[in-house]
Image (tube, rainbow, N blue to C red; front, side, top):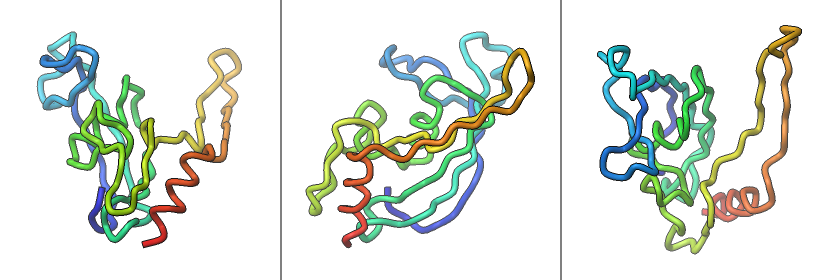
Length: 142
């Protein structure tokens, strides 16, 4: 969603949304360790580019934990849900651009982890899919 640049860290607990059980939600991190249905979640984010005159932003995320829908939940918590993600409050189309996505505008450019047996650090990189690139080009036009 729009807004200026910036970066930050989000720390919440994540658990099932009490109103919509198929969705996850953010809860206060304080006291979560005593609630088995909640798990601590921490993410770092950085706005890389403001797009479409502030209607959208390209944001990079670095996860400190790996919770279900963590980026989607934290983006909604910050008031900036992902484009193409109506489950978490994002729009499917950005007017007046007419740019649309029929899925969350989310791409894992880099994934890395330590191999469980060898301890070797494994890193995988992938370019964004065509629909993501096209939406980005459209949003950069103005």
